[in-house]
Length: 351
Image 1 (tube, rainbow, N blue to C red):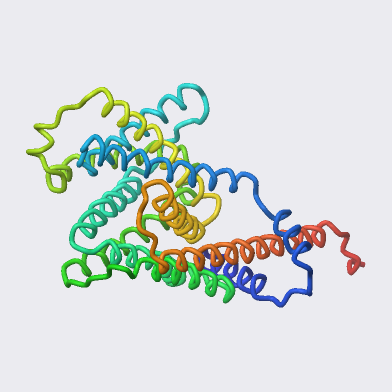
Image 2 (image 1 turned 30 degrees about the vertical axis):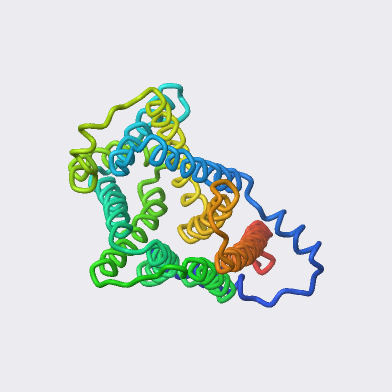
């Protein structure tokens, strides 16, 4: 069957499985079935991404505030250069085998990443933090729309409802300082589109190029680092950079930030490759909730009840989304096993 038809058939099957009415079960039985459907590898990837993402926020916050290192684009370039170096070490140790990939497709993925970084930084400069966060939330429905239009992937209604709840919670908690302006809005919309394509391509390129996360990131990291070099003078203060003195503590924080970034970049590719861009987005919203809570606890930020209520809504949505996805996966495995059994069964109709 053509790829588009296969994708549509697979999406329809997932939609049917997720939307079917289920027999009445107790909460314990549902929890046991959910746990049985969990993929331990995907859980490990998500946990790695969750921990490393929170760690890099804390390290970078310390680097920006305490060491006065105000050069985020340069830092991102260093992250990818260090990621490539780390993957080179992994390849030398035999942890994975580099694979020759189509450089044009890798450049497209790297360009999307650079566009995501550039537009995100400009959006944060032009918009209030509240509006910036609200626009980031739109990445989730935009990914769902693009996957529907480009790949014929239809979401089941329970998944749509769970994603809506998650996005509503994040948007509500960010509505404390929303301010609108034309230039900022246009840049934010462009950033949402580029980010959505980037996250989709991270998943599709692994399948289309038949490369695992390590092999794809091994190519993308150096290309993205080189593409960011000419962008640094546009976004970072070069006069301040030339006068900046690197101390031993700053150097230590830079090494720590780059080391954690290696795990962030790698786990991002692993999570999207083993789950989906939408699941990665839901994980991202959950990370945002933890970061907000951490800000209250660690940095003494003022508590706003809209933040608390919004994060509670996000948590409910994340749990609901996870439950629906696990139920759909369990049903898909059961159907696949039944189909395999029917193929192995002797054909009694033959004479």
